[in-house]
Image 1 (cartoon, rainbow, N blue to C red):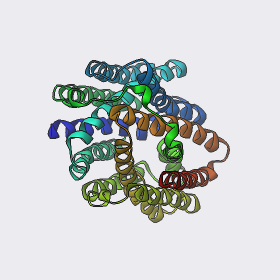
Image 2 (image 1 turned 60 degrees about the vertical axis):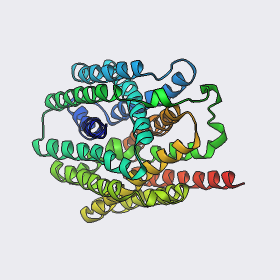
Image 3 (image 1 turned 60 degrees about the horizontal axis):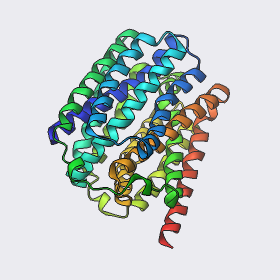
Length: 366
């Protein structure tokens, strides 16, 4: 199971790397505006937000549904290649792709969190970061055409489907897990926490959707930009490998620290956009603002609810889903009209996420 999980994470996040780092820039070749790129970037996350509500009230996330999602991930990847020249059809393909991706990751994350220790989880999950960095470095060096970039995306979607299919045959969580009825699941009880993870992901909208374009406009070459992405992921990998002892401490304190660091990271990128040294320094903080934050957040959610898979779906849906969709859209609007202020806005939003965590901690301790 450990090998299959490692291979799945490698393929899945390599796929995310192509989709997030190279596809937005590729869309410029098809004469998409920055606002249209922002809308496209918000499509897949928006589907991730809707899905948990569908599964809460109408559908049970079974192994059969997981297999269908794997298949549609591959089909969606192929459709992205064949529909890119038409904005509305391409937007529809992104909705399908995003919905499928939003189903498979929470399913696998629940298996990993249920079967692995916190220390071992990080060492398995880091293979996702390795997949991301390998694809970013490789495609950055090759400087592939738009068509070849989409072919690469389709191939990685196939491997995600393949490894996920073998994982489901060894899944024992569904058989052992006796959850309460989904109707008992409550978001309002911890509303401040859910608000914080939403805002935290909104604060990443400009980075995920426009960092490649933004860095290029500062005069950095495509090769240097790929190094910047890769360096951030290398720092992420180091954190994932060594974070085990940290996760034995208070998870809420870790989340507060990581959120403040993220606000500082975006502020620094706003103040010194053309400084290569400080941009690399900002990328090093990805170890905290993504790796440490993400593991602490999913571990905290895992401990809050008895409906483990539904909780992970809502985490993905509210953070990477609603937060990612709204963040990409807001970033598109801001970048279209006030490009220099993009990361100042992101820094302010991250600080709001920190304030919401303080509210959650106070309410929880009462």
